[in-house]
Length: 281
Image 1 (cartoon, one colour):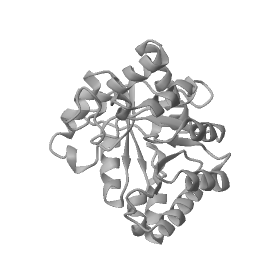
Image 2: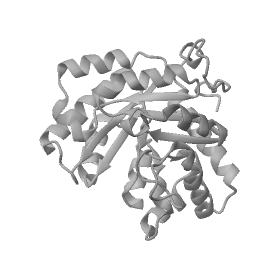
Image 3: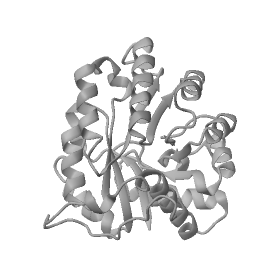
Image 4: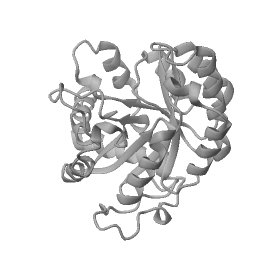
């Protein structure tokens, strides 16, 4: 029933017990997981995971922190991975002017380049935007408006910004921080997001929700975020979980012939029913 629309199972934090974490997620009722490779060194790990487990899909892209590493060779490598049947999104890409690990001009150029690449592949994008509201809105409006859509991951801006992004066709994904204290702005956003444009994520191993805060985040902890979303929306948890699942399938899986991309013959794959094609959800 539950969906984790954004995590990082390929990262070193899961190196020692990745299989156990994935098995625990299945036990806890996760239908789908999207694992997101943010650097070229993670791309092959993403593919290994999604080929082993039927219900896990992947995304790849160069995170704004690593924009300085993006070049023509990286671009060609990404293009090759985007042809994989279970790579269902380009991301996470975007702008991060809070850390500025890469120069702002470089981040902007690489963001635009990757948006254009996603547009050419007709694949959804996963957007990371932190302390870069105006630049993100401007670039998306100029470069990507009316394209294959996507999601604003770990949404942190206000309701007015959310409305602008919704008008462009984007989904809004809420992380475990919604379970923290002092979340009035985020709560107002959640109250006003249409149910058919809402996603939930863990961003595991980061941003662990209450009551597990202080531990490494794991995909099955998304249930706490969804429970909080249901509370804010004044709806049953199951109703919200099913809606989020439908949104995930519509956005990420509707454009893929997923039956051709499932792992074949792996002894410990997790079998789930194939999602509906776009237009059937």
